[in-house]
Amino acid sequence: MPSSDVRTSPATPTTIAQREVELLLLRFLQYHQPDVYALWATHPVADMLADDSKSSSGCDEHYSTAEGTQVRLYRDKHVKYLQKRLVSLPASLESLYSAQPWLVYWTLQAADVLGVLKELFAVVPPEAMAEFLFDCLKVSPTDVTPGSSGTSDVSLAVKTVASESLNDSTDARQQSSSAYPNEKIKEDDEALAIGFGGGRLAHIPHIAATYAAVSALCMLGRTEYLQSLPRAAIKRWLLSLRCEDGSFRMHVGGEVDIRASYCVSVVVTLLQIDGVLDEKAARFVASCQTHEGGFACGDHASEAHGAYTYCGIAALILMKRPQFCNYAMLRRFLAARQLRFEGGFNGRTNKLVDSCYAHWVGGAHVLLRVAEAYTQLLGLGDRRHCLTSSEMMLLNHAQLISVTRLRPSGEEILEREEEKHKESLRRVELYINASPTPAASSGPDPFTGSPPCFWDEEVGDFYFNQRRLQLYVLACCQEKVKGGLMDKPNYPNDAYHTCYALSGMSAAQNLHYMPYDAHCGSFDQSSDDNVYAIGLRCGLIPGTDEDHGVVLATTKKDDALAQLQPTNPIFNIHHRHVTNALRAWGLMDCLP
Image (cartoon, rainbow, N blue to C red; front, side):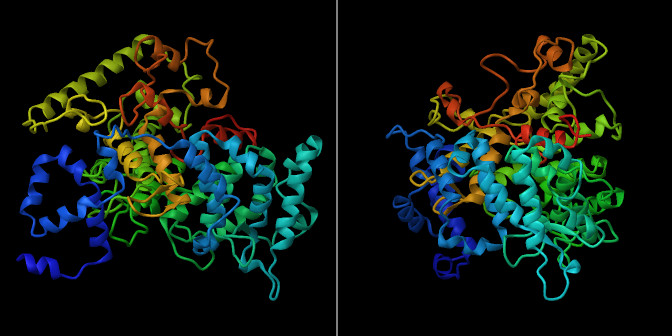
């Protein structure tokens, strides 16, 4: 195409955004892919791109070694940003009026991943957040009499019980045995269907808001909040959303969506509500897997999406039907989501990079490995084998088992299976190394001074370059002045991307080799005959003072400040919150 045609061709918002990202990452491309960078010289608009790149700002400056700039996590800035999100919201957030519980969840989760949840509670106490969330409890429109909102009594009753239970532990134990907060709700037992709405006023129950509210209540750290919820009324509402094919609607009269299946799965698991999920629900989720290998929003949709894929895998795990997924196709779809140029993920084929997919796609990568191991654990796989130590640690990370309570028949069994696994890996490595090796780029690594093979070094346990993903988030998606994270360079920061970019970084840091018991403060180190202790003793699990298999953005030892807190890959909340939720109903600290 002639140069003039390219210059005068109409631009779209997508092409403009892509061009801006490419310009901001141009120096990165010049170092990492010099052969590809050389193609810019033959581009019809190369001179225009070169002029624009000189004035570009954003992540480009992070790749300048002349100024000694290093990628790092601006932790203090992000903490201040999160504290402000709960006390002072900008006018630009008016569009999120129907997603108010989400604002609480995003802020709490981001703070928890940074390890500063207590500091956040010092600004806004958990009682205030719980009061707000309880005010979002709404009666389903199908159960509201004409001319009445039917919401204030429910939220006030639940809030009152929660407040009383905090002041009187005896009353708390008595009230926790009841599924309803007061006598009025008991009297209307057969009529009420209750869920969380998107805010205090003028909202109806919505499953996405309910997922966010329940997750946020778990993070507040008090089981009384969960025990005060009207579980029977919530169950009745969830059943009203279920369709004949096993799918769920987002709200009464709303759209059918795989997100609803995931949200319902999380809610019934954290609140231990039985009788909502069945095999038909799992088969609907499985029917959403497309020819691309990922999951679409519904069984009639054709385009796979990273976030829907995350929801689909997590839902199948919680429904105990992981065998319904085609993992060979799923691996291909997820592996194609990491962009070789940027290092971050996109959500769909031929789409732009976005930091939120660090969680949706990065978390899906983790869940892929978890689901494959879970299929073997349940004895549902086509090719059965004994689980390796790494697979057991992944199941432990998802709180599907507890490696500190499992005791194998003997150490020799674990060692024999590990040798079989290593032999399989050696064969794969020989096959890969048989292909021509691409020419290495010249020049030292701009971060470590090591040879440039660092960029394409596969580290960690998952099917993506975990270090490259972290580099994209740290170098290109941080607001260095005001704090918070953004979609891509020169985009505004927001709570959504702050939460999911940090959660994705946590997933990419390979934090699953420490038992969740240790995160929850209940780790018994005296036992030496469980799977974890034997794995450490035999060198099957990384566990030294300096190395727990953690993968950070750089290999610098002083980069420890960039290490984040782990998060359960199924729920995207910390393991201790899942444990507290399960214990609220008298269960152990792993999923039943």
